Length: 309
Image 1 (cartoon, rainbow, N blue to C red):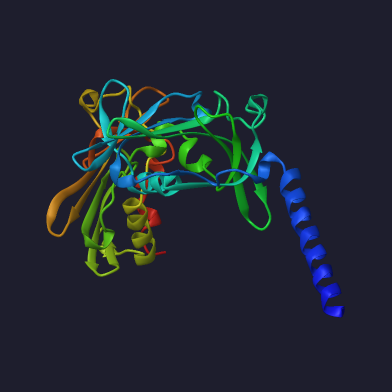
Image 2: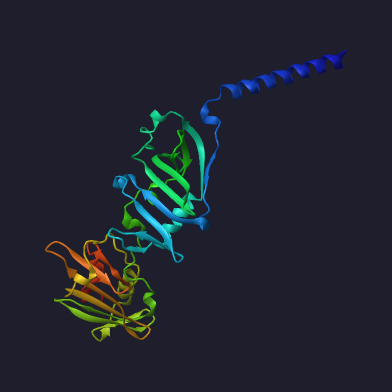
């Protein structure tokens, strides 16, 4: 008798739980029933990526693979290699896009989350076909240190929330994808740096590892090494694409670096473009003209900063 009652009780409880489970799923909103994995991109098959950043008003930035090198198209038909870290960040962010929440299926919400025509759109192509077409919109921050971005697949109504912050990679101008390296190399291999300006000239010579002399006297080796290291890591902030290197004839200032016994291994020239603008051209990047703003003062350092106190 007790066993029968217990079985009936258990059956009733089980039936109640099933009913509650059905009720929970029936009353859940759209935000809980969706495909979490929005996209998976095979980087090996991608040959072209087009980015339309919100910050530039949707101006197209075209990245394309040519002879195993990723390049960025420039105005006028030219192109340059994409900066390595930039293209790695592109594929890292596009490899797998997973949603944490379905925000809305209402197209009226597109503008609110900036996933309409003003959002940052990224289109990837594989075998000349679209492999991914996504629009990134607003982002939000949530403690502890978690970023979320609102996104929508082009051609679909749904707005999703995805974990990650995509603006630093995609909502940027063309220069952010270009290789902005001016010098590069390894300053520990440099034998000397000859600096020539209208007001001063000197040769900074390496006499031993991390030991230097200037004007025949020992230099402040720490200051000298820091100067050369900064030269090695120097990057331009912006380009002067409307200026052709062939138009630049007489430099105002120059630095010539010898490395491993090779004279003039790296040569930097500064040119006056107009009364307010100067440019930097590097032998490492002969086709690129960099705006000298914020750069020239790191290249042309007065000898007093390098001498021993």
